[in-house]
Length: 199
Image 1: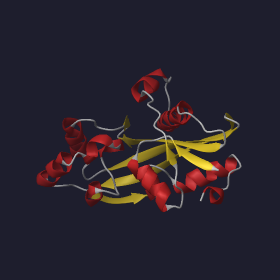
Image 2: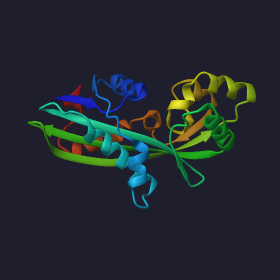
Image 3: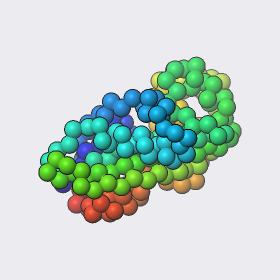
């Protein structure tokens, strides 16, 4: 059975490839801001799960496949934040989180498709505590200039340049990268697809 990754994230693709799966990538094009605005008083977990479901549901399916959609956001001091988008926002965010901890939450949705129709669905969220280091001004400016923090949840990575500035995590490291392998395996089992059938 083919796995379709409903994400343009190179980090998620890399995690799946390293774990023995060569997914087909189809980008959903979901308007994340509009979707979040349409939710009524969601918890942080409900927000990322709703986004992951929207991404999984928005792509074109094969006749027989499994679709995985994910979305990650950082919960910091009660505020749920996504990608910074600009250098100014990334800088401000890093000044706030430096030397502190936040929770990276990744929502996951898996769909089982048979004869072109969704016949199974499971969703969940994985939360991981991230302990941020304190980069010097020079290091922070160089990191922001690299462009990496502008387009990733929370404005940091652990598997790229941002890893130099993360003191540690408590929880699932692949979830911080963008897709929790343990949670994805659990959700696949819930829809009757052993992960080993996708290798």
